[in-house]
Image 1 (cartoon, helix red, strand yellow):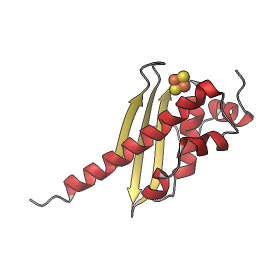
Image 2 (cartoon, protein in one colour; image 1 turned 60 degrees about the horizontal axis):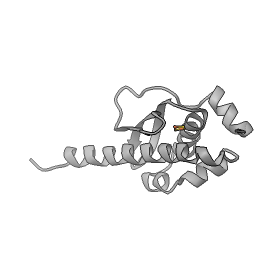
Image 3 (cartoon, protein in one colour; image 1 turned 45 degrees about the vertical axis):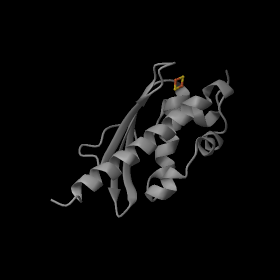
Image 4 (cartoon, protein in one colour; image 1 turned 30 degrees about the vertical axis):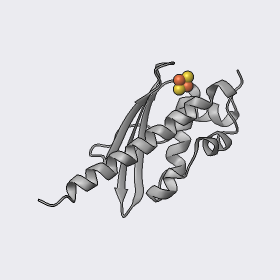
Length: 129
Ligand code: FES
């Protein structure tokens, strides 16, 4: 299996790794087949992702996908962030081996669930009574 230069670079030095103390939204997803786990946390202001961090216990493709995803969506609106698809990640990474495409989908799933969590928290906050 051959990884692109970009995947190796991000696997060795991933961006936006860590935890946000008081996140506005977060989600943890896993792939039951390979056992990899990915957690994404967000800070949101005026409908924009102002900060995003991740922790991925997984393969090089999963780590590189989470890293590139956080770089792509930081500063974007929630709608723009939701429009980033796994094939955008794969292209930005300079490609992934076919058997590793699911690793980039896992990153997208984590982001979508973290955004859903943010929307849920916000609707509870704004609920009357
Ligand atoms: Fe499990 Fe990559 S092999 S996410």
